[in-house]
Structure formats: structure tokens, C-alpha cells
Image 1 (cartoon, each protein chain N blue to C red):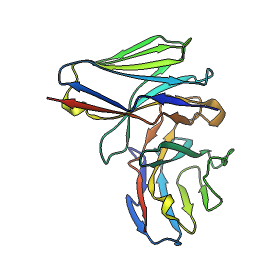
Image 2: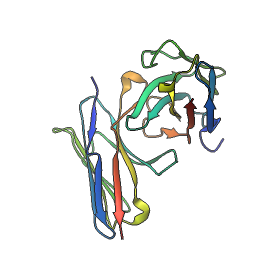
Image 3: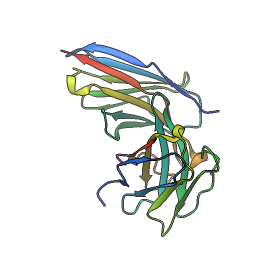
Image 4: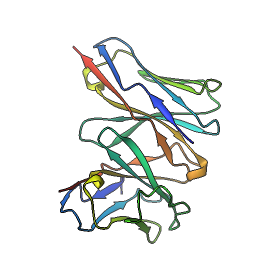
Length: 115
Length: 112
């Protein structure tokens, strides 16, 4: 697609429920990144994928968070048993790869509210 | 660890120049970036600079890099009310596949 596409754009969920956030990167971009933006907390790096592989998962906040990427394209970030502190904007970004650092583009984000 | 620091707020009058400053810690950063975020919107890449450059100019935007002091600045000439937004400085790290480490953002308020 023309840009990074994320869905849903807004999600309100009850505490304890699972949520799934989807990211469709720019066509041809091999690297994909997930960030979390909380009010007053700036942007927190969560995980990146090169192709389908995620070399480093240590940025994920807890074991309730997981992410996968299949077919080198779409990625899903799953949060299990959501807590109120999970409320944030989850941003996805993509680039042509780690050697092309000047082409990292962000989606509009998925706004998650846990009530 | 990696850390990017920015001042939180800047207020200017329309037509003045704005200068937003940033310091970073990782000397191996290859690219340094400025992103803009308007209310309720995603992050828009404004400009970036390669670490072997001192300056980059792009229309009203001028980026200055002092690699020795690990200091980056963004100057916006003839600031307009439409420039009001949060500006994020970020460094790109090869150790995380080029993932960006962001500062907390500088809120620029432009008054007419």
C-alpha cells in the first residue's frame, strides 16, 4: 500500500480481555517496528522484525505481549489479559531494512483504551 | 543505555525562528531524525541527517549536528501557526535493526 496501515484505529476493551492489533507495512519494506506511546511517556520501542524473524523481544513490556509476522508482510501485536496500564497508542513503522535507516515511516496508530 | 533528551516545551511568535535542541548518547548512531506529531495524528518524518554530516537544509528546516557533543538541533525559519505540534528527536541504532530511540518530544506552541 501507499503507507503503513494499522487497524483498528481505535479500540476500547474491558480489563482482562485479549486484543489484537494489526499492521500492514509499506509494500516491499522488509523491516517492521512496533512502538507504544503513552500519555507523557514518549515513544517506547517494543519489537522489530526483519522479514518474519524478531531477533530481540526484550522490549516487550511483559509476557502478556506477543507479536508475530507472517509472509514477511502483515504483523499482529497481541495483548493478553489487558490491564489499564496497557492503554496507549500502539504505533507500527516499516522501512526497507536496517541499512536504510532514512526511510522509516509510521502508521497512524491504534488507540487502545482498557476500561 | 541509549537515551535521547529534549526540552519539553517551546513557545514562539509567528514569523520568528524556532530552535529545538536534542542530545543523544549513542556515538554509533548512524542516522538522526526529526519527526513531527500533530494532535491525534501519527508521526511524520520531517528530516534526517547522516552522522558524517554537520548540517542539512530543507526549505524552512535546518538541522545541525555536533557529533563531538552529541547535540542535534532543528531550526524552523519563519515559524507558522501550522507548525504547532510535538517534535521528536530520534537516533537510529543498528543493534536493533535500525529501530529508533526517541526523545520525549518538544511541544512547540506558535502564537499569532
